[in-house]
Image 1 (tube, one colour):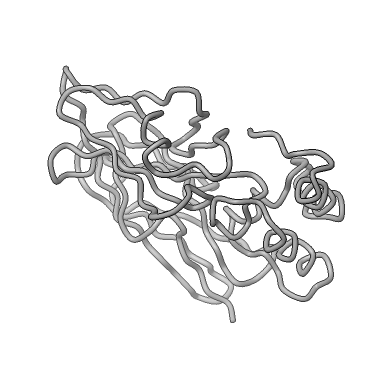
Image 2: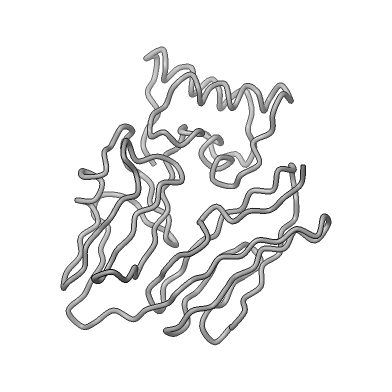
Length: 219
């Protein structure tokens, strides 16, 4: 059935002046979702769900699936860093609040080491196993979350931090029209060769990885 959900969660946090990419799932292929901010003095959002934190405060971004009159919203708090506070991603890639280019089967402790913080900040990675597609990493000052990152591991369609036959089946089922991949995060990481579609080429990449013919490169 048609629906819309913001995959970043019900709440998120970002630093003043930074950007955050929102991801949606709709349950329907090729759906059109629009976005709106409850207060553009605090948050601005473009047609692709890219949010900019304008100034300190809290506002909501609503995703609207107009065709089926379905909506979902996320509450985002914008905070300004203190002079002694910094957040820096080391060795991994970070773009608009999305962290990628980390290796499969990375545990939360090792992953957190690549988010360097100063001042009284601390890092929390929300997984008990491996960091995978959709895992959230957050930076806190005391009990207050200042920054929410979301992770993407290419090839990890089911989000378990590994690349396995399960991911292969997700892609195979999509190609054979058994079950669609409708979440933005899952679509992105299933498109191994980045040609904007999910095809037999992508499942061959996964198969070659599983059979140790050629391992997927991190990106």
